[in-house]
Image 1 (tube, helix red, strand yellow):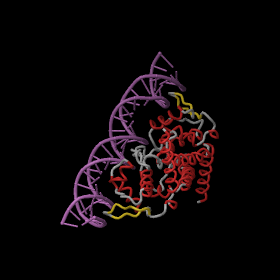
Image 2 (image 1 turned 90 degrees about the vertical axis):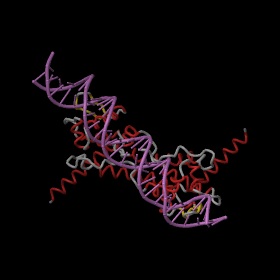
Image 3 (image 1 turned 60 degrees about the vertical axis):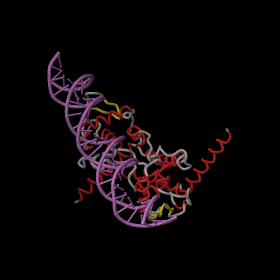
Image 4 (image 1 turned 135 degrees about the vertical axis):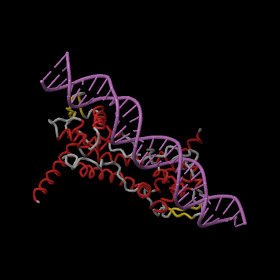
Length: 149
Length: 149
DNA sequence: ATTAATTGTAATTAATATAGTTACAATTAA
DNA sequence: TTAATTGTAACTATATTAATTACAATTAAT
């Protein structure tokens, strides 16, 4: 299937809302930065709202972060958009009569869980604030570099 | 799309080959443990062979591990079956004219890479030998428990 | 109050990755 | 010689995704 970019796009939306707060923040404006359709943005924002990451008001183009960027981690956004799904997929249908088929799911499941948690810990170490500040620094570097030419 | 179980099924195949070495190891026998078709097993084994994890001989039902189980990690098998693909997907199409759209891919890419490596380190910490021994211990525990009844 | 802009959401579509299936040539081993 | 088997290509069915279309509900400005 097509690969899911919900997580990345949702992070994008949250960063955009913070960086451009105070300006008109319609789904159309946000969509032009994400390069998708306004409907997709609204759908993603619906999920972020359900999970308490933003507050929106129907009819009004003023979405707001529900918490400060320093209090939102990438893992919070990941759980909101993708849920706590496996990173590595078990084959749930193996022969229970076989020594391998009858035990491998439990064993592999434990290994996969440990790997997943290791990745999630990294996501939880980074906040939206970290992301935003890094984006702003990169942008400033770009502008300096352009000025030099 | 349907979720990929290539990684799990490939691990299953390798564990099966080691545990049942010395017996007839046709793709049909292996498939009955994985609960899939012999063609799928042969296809997966083709990939494992290409990546130097097993040795097979056309026409002969005697696949062999190319290295000892203690020298094959879950990460070796992961790279063989899934490659070093992203665990978290960037949206590659964002507006380069926007501060957020023009910088987020680089920044998020770095964060995702760190999370991916953390998960891969865990996979690399576990060997096929670890898996096999754990499966055998669990099987023994099952048999003891059944005997008690 | 009216109205243009906007959000929220459901239904549908197109694209794509996957396991499974069918078919068969090449190889092995008895 | 032959039955069993591997290796591989072509095709199918299924499932997930972003995108699209449509429209009711709501807001905010006049």
